Length: 374
View: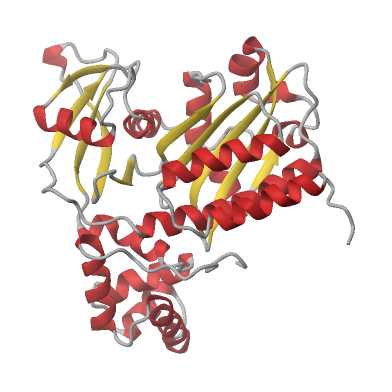
């Protein structure tokens, strides 16, 4: 057998990660362990590993390795507006799992705002981005950065991380599928108000309870889920790119799912309108309708199957679905059979019942290896 491009140790680490990702462990613990193991084979000086909402790609939790890197507002706007180099949305649409900044810019890293404004002043150079995909969805992302006195990431390293990312995607999906119903009743709706710089200005009592539930140990900063929803809301209000929902769903440590969504507040002229915009971020239990896209993705449905499944659950007939999606009734029936097989049901009524039960009932059963070949 030919020696792997990165050596025998790299192969052993990859196999160990693959085994780890089959164990359906807590997503946070899985990310932390994979981040450390990858670093043994593909060294990096600063890393940001995130779990994500598979529909909006907004990060739900962050695991930092090495020095914390805070992106500049301009780069965050580029990222969320889809105008940055190697933007996560672009990578997701292309289906790529890993790419380096040096390779994408032909070595001219200053083409990326984040390199000019953030990385270069911190003594960082190349960046390797990864998307932890499984099936047709992305369940996690990562940014691995090297110091400017280190070599750029090689093509072999990028390919290696892409392989790891696919295993991680499967592991994250499997772990999220085991999210139990809440041990105690979830709180009601809570609201946070953030100023233009993203700092907390005011909050309701329910919102404070949600923050404690997200992170029992009070951190110095707001959770990344709250911060990025607010930044996305501001980016949507500013325009400059195709908007995406300022919304995410995240699994809670004690069970259950939380919906986080943001909207920019508009000041009236009577109260000093025209000043810097504030953002309201609402935290509340995710409803069945909120969770439906996530539940469908957990079952490994393709983007088209997710579209069709939502219409099935909404009660639309075959003819109406065909006209709505611009496909034949025969194709609708074929997709329906595939959906039933993936969710392990035999009828539309059973499909609706199963998806409804998974919001508040037993965890989803994700077969080992599902989606790795896709």
